[in-house]
Image 1 (cartoon, chains in turn cyan, red):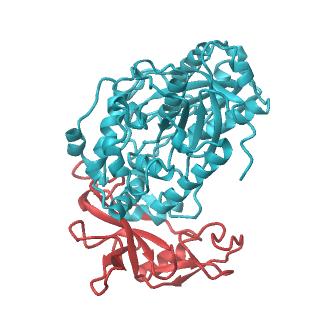
Image 2 (image 1 turned 120 degrees about the vertical axis):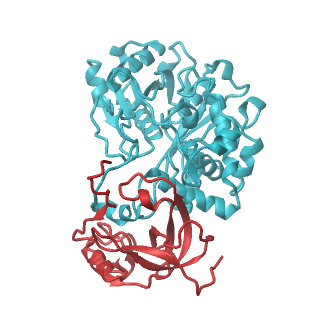
Image 3 (image 1 turned 60 degrees about the horizontal axis):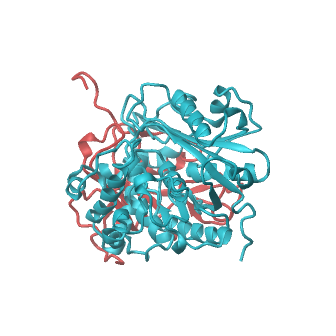
Length: 399
Length: 150
C-alpha cells in the first residue's frame, strides 16, 4: 500500500462566496470575479492583504470558437491578483479539464509547503452573449479536427452521446431512467438562492418531453451555459482554527488521465470507467477512506451520464446498476444517498465542479441552512469525466 | 440565409504532412492508415510519437487496411453544431473498431440511416461519402453478409 498523502488534513477551506448565476450578467466577468473574491475573503474573516496565493482553472469550455479574453470571457489567477492590487507569492493556473480538483491540488500543495499562507481559489464561467454556445462556423477542418469534423462528429454532445449510448446498450437501460437524476438535481437547485434554476424544479414528464439533440443526449442532459463566479479561501489547518467558520479539511485528492491516444473528443466508455476505478484506488491510498464512508458524495453532472459513470466507478453502486439505483436511492430529502444535494451543474447552471466542492464545504461546515444533512462528516467532490478530471475528499474533523 | 447566398458546405478537410496520404487514398475510395515504421502497429490519428512503442521517430507510412469492423457505439444527430449538415439531420455516427488491430477506432456516418436496426457488435464495412468541395470522407455501411459478434 502507498503511504498516505503527506498533506492529509493539513489544509482547510475557511470561507466562500458565490455570485448569482445568470444567463448573462450585465457587468464584465472580471468585475463579478473581483466582487466575489472580496466577498469570500470577508467571509473567511480576512482582508485582501492577507491573501498571498491565487489559483484557478480558467478554461472557456465551449467548442464554438468564442475568443478567450482575460477579464471578459475568462479570469485567470494572475488577472484576479493584479486587479485586486496584490502581488502574491504564489499565483498559478491549472491547465487540464478537471479545473476544480486541479485547482485544489495546486492550492493544497502551495499551502502545505509554505509557498503561500492564504489562497483564493476561484472559478469564473462565461456564456458568450452572441452565437450558439457550441456552434462553430468552420468551413475547413485543419489539424486534429480533420479526422472527425468532415463527417459531422464535433463538440461535447456527440462526445458524451457515444459512451452514454454504449452504457445504455451494454446494460439494457432506458434513457427515461435519467429523469430521476434531473428531477433530483433541479429539486435541490430550486432551493439554492444563487442558482440559475432557483425555484424552478422540473417533473419527470418535462424531462421526457425535452428536445433530443444527439441521441440519447437531450437538452436537459446538459448543464445550461451561464455567467457566474465562485471563490473559496483555503489556508493551513493550524491557521484555520482561528477563523470564524468551522474549517473543512482536505483529506486527499486523485486525478485521472486518458491512457490512449484517441480521435478528438472520442471517449469510449471503458476509458472513462478504467480511470474512475483508478481514482477510487488513489483516493483510498491517499486518505485511508473508502467511498462507502462518504456521507456527502457530490458527483459531477455537467452531462447527466457522468452521474452513472461516477456512481459505478467509485463503487457507490454495482457496475451496470446506476440506472436502477437512481430511481429510489438518491432523493436527499427522503434520506437517500445525497449525490446531488447541492444541485450539481444540472441544478445550478454550468458552474463546472463548483457546486460539488461548495456542497461539501457547506455541509461539512454545517452552513447548508435548510438543506443541512443530518450526517455530514466526509465529503467527496468530483469534476469532469474520470479520465480527464478528478475528485477531492473532505472531512469535518482532521484525520 | 438570404436566397442569393450559397448553401453552407460541410467542413472540408485540410491535408497536411501527417494526413495527405490518408486523404489521397480516400480520393481513390481506399482506407489507408498510419503504420509505425518501428513497431509496425497502426494508429489513428497519427500522433507525434507512436502510442504503442513510444518512438519519437515513428516514420509513419499510410498503408491500405481492410475497412471491416464492429460497431462499439453510435449516436443519432438531431441537430448539428457545424455548417452544411442541416439537410442531413437526422443522421447516424458510429464508433467502429476495425478488424485490422485491437482498439483501432474510426468514427463515421452510417449510410444506412437512423431507421436501420442497430446493436452493439454489428458488423460494418467502410464506404465513402462523396463531397463536392473536397475529398470523399470515410463512412460505414452495415455488412449484410455478416453475423454480428453480439
